Amino acid sequence: MNRIYAHLVLMRPANIITAIADIMLGFAASGSVMMLLESNNIQIGSPQLRLLFWLILATIGLYGGGVVFNDVFDADLDRVERPERPIPSGAASRTSATVLGALLLIGGIGAAFQVSMLSGALAVITAILALVYNALAKSHPILGPLNMGMCRGFNLLLGLSAVPSAVQVYWYMALIPIVYIAAITVISRGEVHGGDKRILKGAFCLYLVVIAGIFILDRLQQYNLLYALPFLALFIYFIFPALLQAIKTLEPLHIRLAVKAGVIALIVMDATIAAGFAGWQYGLIVLALFPISRFLAKQFAVT
Image (cartoon, rainbow, N blue to C red):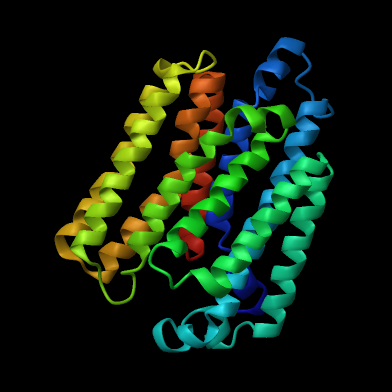
C-alpha cells in the first residue's frame, strides 16, 4: 500500500463517519434541529449549521487521532498478530503516524473551541480519554471497555454542546453509547484468538440494556418513540445476527464480523435516537451516513 493510503487506513474512515453520527444525534437532542426548523433559516450560513460544521470537524480530528494512536501504541503487538497493518508492514512509520495523530487531536480540539469553551473542554477530555485508553487501559478487562465507551459518550456530549445548557439537562444520554461501545470492545477481545462464550453473552446483555435505554427515553416530553421504532428495528437486525453467530462459533472471523457490524450499526443507533428527538426525516438524514460508512468499510479496515 502507498503511504497516503496507509495513513488513511490508520484513521479508519468508516469509523469516523460513525463519530459524525454521534454529533448529529447530540445536535438533535440539544434542540438545535428544532430551532432551525422554527427559524425557517436553514441556510449554510445559519448560526446552528456553523456550530454543527465545527463540531463535525472536531469529531473527525478527535476520532481520527485517537485511532491513529491506537496503531502507534500497538505497533509491536501488531508485528506479531496483525503484520498487514500499516506500521508493521512498513507502509507507514511510527513517527509519521504519531505526527498525524497529534495533528488530528490538536485540530479537533481547536475546532471544538470555535463552538464554545464547554465544547473545547469536552474535546480535551475526549482526547485524554483516547490516549489513556491506547496507552494504559486497553488491556484491562473492565477499565478498557469502560474507557472506550466514555470516549464515545463524551463525543455525544460534544454534539449536545451546540447548546451548552443541554449538556447539563441530557448528560445521562452519554450512558447509552458508553454501554454500547463497552459491549463492542468486549466482543473485540476475541478478534485474534477467538471468543469466550461467557463474555459474548455478557455483550449480548449489554446490547439489551442499550435497547431498554432507548425505550426509557420515551419518558422525555421532547422524545417521540414512534418515530424511532422503524430505525430501532433496523438496528436490532444489524447487531444481533452477527453476534449470535459469533457466540455459536467463537471463531476470530465471526468475532471480527460482529465487531464490524456493531461499529457500523452505531449510525443506525444514532439515527434511532435522533429520530425520536427531531422526527423521522432527520433520522433518515443521519441514516444516510450508513451507506457512506459501509462503502468506506469495504475500502479500509474497521477493526
